[in-house]
Image (cartoon, rainbow, N blue to C red; front, side):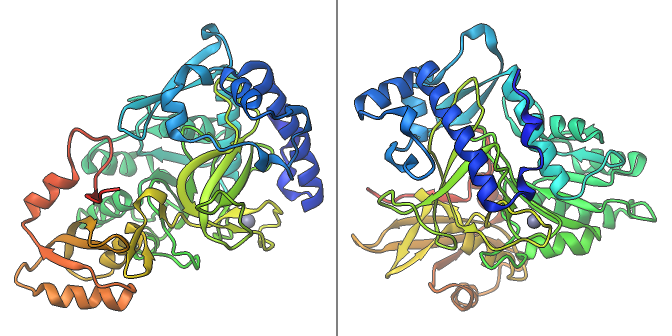
Amino acid sequence: MKNFYKYEKISFLSSSRIKAVQEKLLHEHVMYCKNNSPFYQRLFKGHKINPGKINLSNLCDISFTDKADIENSNDEFMAVKIEKIVDVVLSSGTTGKPTKIAYTESDLRRLAYNEEKSFLNCGFTPRDTVLLTCTLDRCFVAGLAYFLGVRAVGATAIRNGLSSLESHAQVIRSMRPTAIVGVPSFLRKLGGFLAENKSIPKTPVVSKLVCIGEPLRMANLKLLKVGSDLEKIWGAKVYSTYSSSEIVTTFCECTAQSGGHLHSDLAIVEIVDDSGNVLGPGEIGEVVVTPLGIEGMPLIRFKTGDVSFIIDTPCKCGRNSIRLGPIVGRKKQMMKVKGTTIYPQAIYSALEEIEGVREYYIAVTNESELSDMVEVHLALNNPGRAPEEIENKLQSKLRIKPKVLIRDEKIIREQIYNPKFRKPIRFIDRRKP
Ligand SMILES: [Zn+2]
């Protein structure tokens, strides 16, 4: 069994020593793929790659792996016999058909170590009691990862999962957690519910909110409205965290709250442009991750489909590992409006700041070959307001002026919360390729 704690303190080493450890771990990872992964055996052969010669500077010679590859060749990614698999997670594929990600015992230990390091980044100790508001079942990885992480830190987990506001309020009142893991918009609802029902304990003890699934910050690292609302409502610090079932490596903010640190002994991260060229720190592009030390379904240069940038300036916490900035958007959701590039996330953030907006979704169609047409469908507290007023407010916050359509809240909610999908749908892409 692998000893993941061998490089436990890697983030505090100098950049050059971090790089030396990464070279060694990358070599081991690529050789493992060569010896065990049918997909990479075929890829190396087809592209005439000598895996023994791969290092950090020529890693880019290996072509990317994306969700479609995993979807099309799911079983070929399996690098172990079935008897070594202990857990299977389903990830939504490109066509909505779920793909399997299989973990071995060693992969789950790695996952625990990864999440332990993330929790330690934001100051967790064994004295913490952590309320988990994400599901542990339904073949999702997040809840399991956080539970394993809490356990590895030695803190106490309250696995209340996807429960009602009433249920969480009761748990908070009786068990007094010091930290909560959940989706920012839900935690804001929960905080509001507790305040209305006067059920926040007299001395609030929640000091940390670990936020998943939605961004907390703008590209300049300032908090979005949801982030500052959370800090105000809860009187707690918010920490953003990013991961996926494929990369099984978490980028979690530290107490300095300025980007998610890479666990350098667990992954290599690159940012690439549309043509696949590797970009430098601060440049915005697609996040590509090579998770190290994976046994079940190892990946090389996995294209996450998420867009962000790398921060390589020193961090106040003393760690020298590079950080990943906030996720700007999903690559395939990028819109071009009269020469301006924009992601739905920027529109969501602007809508969040407009008083009286209750629910919303975005629909995009082609206006011309070069420009998209963006419609914002929304429900308001006061439906009598003129769409132009909202359009002007959006224009002042964005560099585009989307068309606003004010609709009935029930209709908007039916569109967003479709039981056919695992997640709320706020983006409808009607563009023809
Ligand atoms: Zn830091």
